[in-house]
Structures are given as structure tokens and as C-alpha cells.
Length: 507
Image (cartoon, rainbow, N blue to C red; front, side):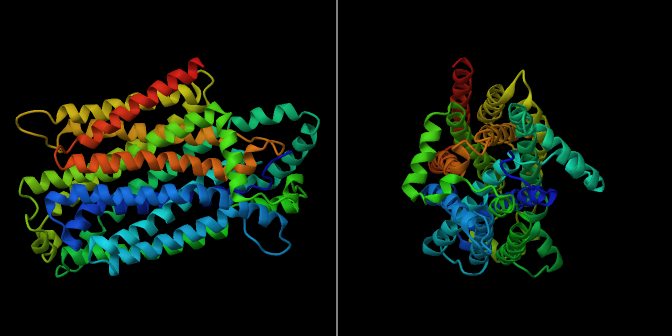
């Protein structure tokens, strides 16, 4: 029996759009952070690294505190939705709606209501963290729904939908007595569907650095009298409207597992008892304890989220410091904030978009390849993780080595682009493999894992949050002394991931 029947193409597009929209907003906020702190808040250039680290710690502490709660809350909402007689959306739909609404509120707060790092910026960053955690941890749950549904790639040929439905019904009747054949067929989708969400998030990152990140420059072009601070703040307000639009789109078109199961008469017997939050969390942790693949997914989440921060925060910080130290940005943040953007730091904005765009484009283009590797019988998830970890080591340690020399570093050379691309490869590889590991559990209605998939996803988010906490605070503070310190930490984390992957293959 299919765990999630009636999964449509629009549902597939909805959760992929959720990943696209959320990541695009995350990349914009993190990449524009040094410019925002300098131009809008007026933070001294020498203290920006420390402030970035502090905000990162706040972000991840908030994420860690709410991640598991949101995961169990998703499982709780699904329980209530399956028993509801009237309209009651499933957990993922509710959490995505709430997450994007909070994103809109926090971006508006950045654009209109912040004048100091504390308390305003702390407050809005915490709201932003809750919103992103809700959106992205729920995307993992929605991926699990797709992986364990009746969706087939032939569904994308919508002009053949009638014939496909007829064939599917006949095939389903024929498989009723051949249940063992069903699960292997579903397993083949894990890597490819994970790769598709990787493509979507990669597109979101590329779209962000090419459109959102250059928005202050474009606004300044249309209004030459607009100051740097004004153009940055206006960009945040515009993106808050985008977040609201994303909330409506995802809520409207996302898959509703509770509704589909009610319509198909598939209500689990266990739903007769409403589990408490501690009980749901305990079952999720128990499933993790007994499943080595989930444990490795937690380690992978730890490293992949750290890599995302390196791409989104510390590469922009590296570029910003280079242009500031070489006199290409004003030494006085407050004076620069009142000047037109095109008169100051224009080249820094443009080059930042190019460098991060290259890394994200490489990640985007490689996403299908990672998906094929994950589904490959010869390699699979474990060896794919090892390859991704090695790529991360090459990129991160390579940047550290390249920075050594009497002339210092120059991010504008070809070597920097190559090494940043290796980090981009590692980022998308670890993300896809980690999501594939989690989505491959709970394949049948009889299994217990799918009932606590929200809790498992929440635990993965917590592990990722701890990784970000480490690299943002330690790396952010250390970067004031050595710009490439965060990349050294990232390289060390990839060494740990490589060792874990090797140990899992031998175990």
C-alpha cells in the first residue's frame, strides 16, 4: 500500500519552490550582512567579523531550541489533521505558511525597524532563525512524503495523465499480492528527488546572488540620490513582500498527507492515542539510535550547514575585508552609508555577486550528478558523502594555503574561484546525501519511523545548528585576526565527515 497516495506534480513543485524561496532569502540576508552592518547600523569595520559571529550564535541557539519542538509539532499537527472532520491542513502546510510569514516580518523589521545591533537586530535575527528552521526542516518532511508516495517521473508528462492514471491503476491491482517488489521501486527515487530539491535550493542561491544581492545597486541606479543605507533597507522591505507571496503559494499547492489518507480510508490504528511531545521526541530519538544511516545523516547535516554558512557568510566577509583593507570601500562606515552606492563599494557588491554566483552555479549544475551517485549501486550514499567531504577539504584547506604569502590574499584570482567551487560542490553533495539518508526510512505504513519523521528531521536540524554555532562564533571571532579561520574549521569538519563515512562503510 502506498504511504502517501495522490501525490501530484503541483505538490512536487510546491515543496521545491519552498526550498528555492527560503534559501534565496537566507543567502541574501547572510551575504548582505557585512554591508548592512556597516552601512545601516554603522558598525566599525574592524568589529564586523565579531558581530557576524555573535548574530550567528544567536541565530543557531534559537534554531537549536525550536528545531526539535517544530519537528514534534509537525507530527502532532498531522495527528490532529488525520482525525479532523472538517478543514484542517497537514503539519507541513501549516509550518510552511507560518515560516514564510515570519520571514516576511523579520525582513521588514530589518528594513524599517532596526537602528542598533542590540536589541533590535538581535530580536529580528531570532525571528528570522525560527522562520528558516520552520521552512527548511519542513522541506525535509515534504521530501519524505514525495519519496514515499505514488509519484512517478512520468507524471511530469501532464499531457499523458489520463493514460498514465489508467496504467497506474492496473499496475497497482497487479502489485497487491507482490508487496516486496514495491519498496525497492520507491528507493530508486531517493537520490533523484533529493537532487531535485538540491537543484531548487541551488537555483534559489544563484537567483539570490544574481538578483536579490544586486538589488541595492539596481535601486541606486534608478535613484542616484538614494544612499547606500537607504538602498539596502529598501531591498529588505521588497523581499518581505516576496516572502508573503511565497507563503501563499506553498500553502495553496503543497501536498496534504492527512487529507489524502482520509480520502483513501488509510487512517493508522495507532492514531487512537494522542502521543505527548516527550513521547514523540522519545520515539524519534529511539529511531535514530537504532539506525546508523540516520546517525550519519546527522553528522552530514552538521557539516553541510557549516558549509552553507561558509559560502553565505564568510566568503562575502572575505570579499568585504579585501575591498575595505585596500581602500576600495570607505574607511568610515557612517560617512559611506550616507553616500550614493555607486560612489562607494560598487565593485565590491558586483564582485561578491560574481564569486558567490560561481560557487552556487557549480553546486546547481552538479546536483543531478550527486543524485545519480546516491542512487548508484556501486557508490550509494556513504561513498557519495566521502567524495563530498574530500571536495570540502580541498576547497577549505586550499583557501587557507593560498592566503599564506607576503602579498596577502586576493579573491579576484582564478585559484580562488576554483577553490570556492570545490566548497560549493561539497555543500550540495552533503545536503543531497543527508536528505536521501533521512528520506529512505519509513517506507511502509507499518513502519514507526514515518510517524515521527518530523522529530527525526528536527534532530537533524539541531545537529546542523550546532555546526553553524561552532563555525559562526569561533570562526567569526577568529576571522578578525585571520580572515580564513572559518575555512580552516570547515576543512577540519570535513575530515570528521570523511572518517565517519569510511567507518560506516566498514561497519
